[in-house]
Image (cartoon, rainbow, N blue to C red; front, side):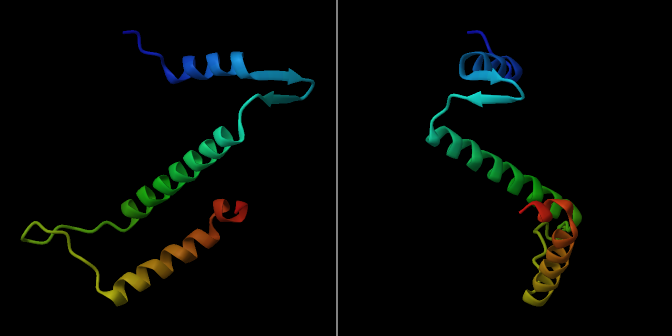
Length: 95
C-alpha cells in the first residue's frame, strides 16, 4: 500500500478541483465540503489555543501524583487572565 503525503494529496486535489482565472482561484467543492473544512479549521485553532493555555498555566502533579485542581476562585482568576490575554491578541481581532 502506497502512502500519500499531505502535499501530494493537496496537489492532486487542486489539480482535480481548482480552476484559475486571472487573480482568483475557484474550487469546485460542495457546501458540505466547505462546512467540513471550516469546522476542521475551528477545531484546529481551538486545539492550538488550548495547547497554548495548558503550556502557560500548567497543572503540576501533587506528591500523590494526581494533578492539583484549582479552587473555583483560582480557576476564575486564571480564566480572567486568559480572557484578557486573548482580547489583546491579534487573533481575537479577526473574530
